[in-house]
Image (cartoon, rainbow over all chains, first blue to last red; front, side, top):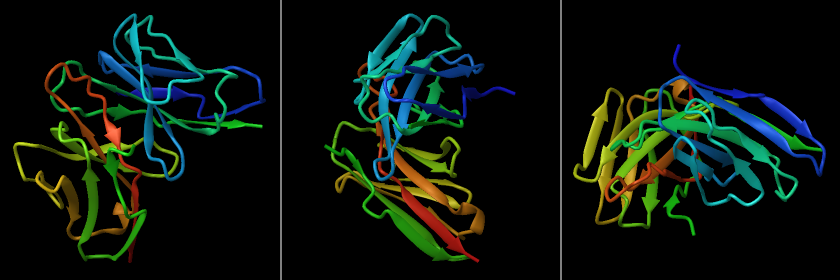
Length: 114
Length: 115
């Protein structure tokens, strides 16, 4: 089955620790994205990548880092510099270039800072 | 600055009736609009979309209407079913001029369909 796999589904972190969220897709999509969901704020774009070895900051990139060494993988690191990291994180992918804008999402990872 | 707004955080509808979810946008450069449906603890799934060259797109029980002059779109679900209960996100993007498929999402509307 083609799709996007995020892991772990739940993650707990102590303050001051970096954590990395995994995102893998087997849809052969060029573009990948990380969004963050907070109550009452919808989905906000953290980082996106249109091609391997290239990525751009989204609207709320501070305190996060990404890499795109392989087409299938787009891991997100939440660093200790992120002031409010507790949230639900969603990874997505799309064909690029695409005229439809349709994103395919993973099931999400919930990060809780203790 | 919220470029895509869903002003109703929640909506409750009786089974079999029509559900109307609304969305407003401020950026006139958006030319493609999408609706996503999301269940708790899951990723959003694509529902229906519309290009700015159209004013209506229909797919089964779901119809999206676009009013460009008012910068407003709406999603109609007829008839509503209990399985439609979820959070619905409106999203917008620009697809021309080197667009990146960067979707801007609204804050979502929680639809509850009562049996």
